[in-house]
Image (cartoon, rainbow, N blue to C red; front, side):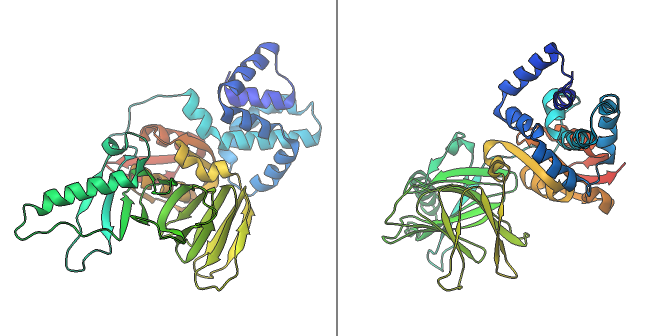
Length: 392
């Protein structure tokens, strides 16, 4: 039996003993399965979701599920019928998870591949008369793990000497003031800074950091998306600059989402505490607590705080895409950075389709297309590295 059917029957109390055992095994197989199950048996959560889903276009997936619950819904009170309808919507919109996990058909999409561990490294602030070389880094340097900045700098200097030794009157590359680590579309990288802080860079992102931190502080800047696991040092604060905002911490874990095309900078705190401040705003600071996200408007230069599921905001670093109430337009932008493709929408209705679910970050693109197609009544036309999306 499909997992969405088991979940539905669990909510309605109609599981047989064999089905209950099957559901138990599925819950124990993955912590994410257990979290999803607990959310779906939480009546308060379901009532909230009912109100939120009323405005979403879930007609196609809900119609499929409605036929399955009609027979048992008549035996329940109206409140539980409404909850069952919400489960149908949540599970149907979450079919990105179920469809990928339990069906794998068709050939992989040619031309569009998932990203990999790669980045480029360049000196910032060297001699203005000399163009600093760019060193390309791949999974060979990282081996899937975090690389220290000392290793990267040694590689950079060795490569620079190799290049300049063949040029007439060439001298060794000047000492680095700062270094720029950039991931391309379809790239990611993990680096450990001099103080032991780990930084996970998402696709199309940049981290600028010094070869050696100053005595009073540890300051870096970021563009795009990065997850920081900051080594604690009470005497030397860690400061991140991102699009007109500074984040000051002593030791904590947080995520910054700040792409140039975004209207706002989203800072999500996982543990510890951080202080946020618009650059040039004086001494006023906003303190953020775990489980909350600070959204800094680039135009208005103000900050609002919302409670969030941190697993959603940081899922990319753990090998997953988790989408919660996101439009297909937002999802395609995220996928395009990682799979490195271009796209367009044949109609705005397709772009505004709302999804809730998850996709493994390293899935074949053909599977991603199949999941989205079956979940939202959409048609995807893939030609080379371009994708056109239309409503069916």
